[in-house]
Amino acid sequence: MLTQEQAVEIRVLARRGMGLREIARQKGPSRNTARRYLRQPEIQGYGPRAPRHAAFLHEREFKQPA
Image (cartoon, rainbow, N blue to C red; front, side, top):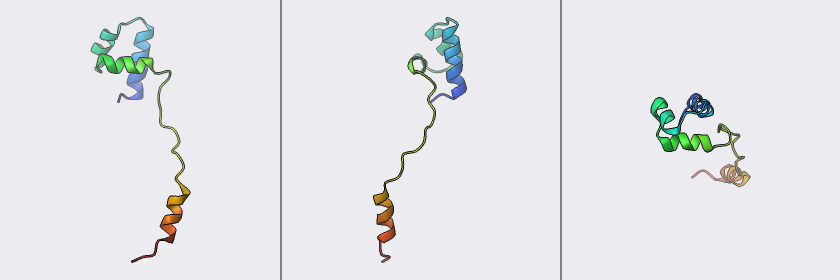
């Protein structure tokens, strides 16, 4: 996975008209990695976590110690 800065640099170079091979040569990732970042609609970030299931929490409360 590339850093956000690297992903932005790849997008900037592509907008300036640089080819995929040249971007990969200059920035280091493989052509397929650079292509994947260019195909993404926008930069991916971490989102909020999904809430935990209440059943798991209740199960934990009701267990009797052995």
